[in-house]
Length: 526
Image (tube, rainbow, N blue to C red; front, side, top):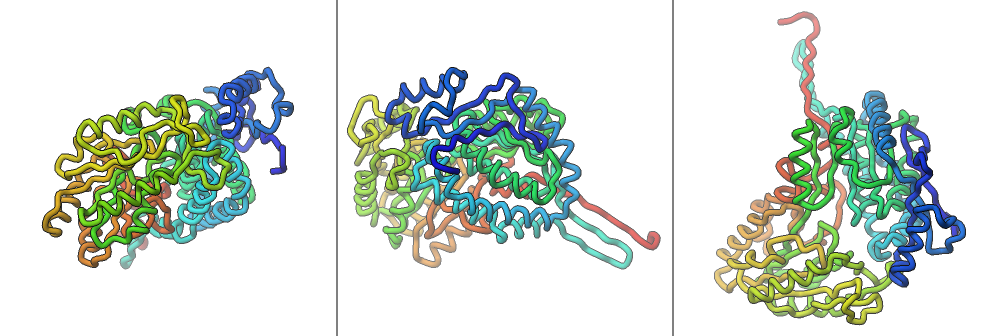
């Protein structure tokens, strides 16, 4: 991209650019412009989207536009994917894996331009670059993709019999990324291509540009260079399309990312419609800090809660602190919360983003305090410059002390995902460490959600007990960042309210395939 360039992307269907029949586009006005003049920026966007203003004359606040898709375009996309899927599935698996690695390499090549678009759409610069780096490093690493490929087929031979158990692609996979993390989840959805599926991705209407750029400028060129069939990847921008996908005879799998209540309703609808639902729902992750923990590392990991103002699922939402270190840990967390300020997303130190549904944040604090918790920091709205305000778009990071493990889940901020910068720290009653550890692990295991859990402890026996007994989640991190993505390990997936009835650690290469046995006898039966 060049300075001042306005990107403009039609829909991409069946290997071709496709415009809305009325020429409608959704325009991206920078988050900085919205924070500087909310009503003026939203009025500008409205005028752009309705065609009253030419985007080329709208100034630097406008960075791009994506064609709006209607139902006919959405149906065209799934039909094109269905035509492409059989041919694409015949491409050798190892060739598709090589393409996946190439996608990761091209993602790195386009990193800086993609970061600028993520920042324009409101993701803090301090988070946008690391997010892209980690997805390239994890989901598209040769280590991850080759491990998945190794799970795809196993054979046994006897004198005249060749028996194979293999995973075969499901066919057409539709991906529904969320507005809060559209681009990384869309890129994750693309890994279903490597399994041999054809894919349809809907970029959310609210933040379509970075996602569309990543798919058009990173993934599509790699597929075209490899001679992939038209329709193997289709890219649309628009409102949710899940009803259309459920009704379509061409759709096999739907990757649904969203809240747990609607997601579990969707799971039931998908099963009824004969579709495979792959759910990425809410998280209410727990971080346990034992008495011998590296407190520097633990604090750094826990304050990942403040990233994007807690409006991402894979962050620590609740903390259990051993009574011996609870006071020091809370002092450090309070200090970190005090130093975490709002700002424009292009400011290098900003990690907070606006919280549009802030009422729930303050209700969670009030509920906790009403049940005996102590608010150590937070509880105010803030303007972008950090000043308290009754109408500020940001909220101050909050730290709560909740005494007593046995009654902690009576507090909503402990029991439910908060989706805001709020850290409840549960301090159990002092007692024998062996008994306390059993109680803590039982508490963690009874969480209705199951995305990630993290632990900070040094004792080898404690670490081994954690590794052996914590099973009700997609990822367990011990003495490492709670949120980070690592090669070979899954980046997505979980149990319970996180993944639904079929929830588990999620590698889309495996989840969008199904097991099949093949039996070949030669030379006559024996």
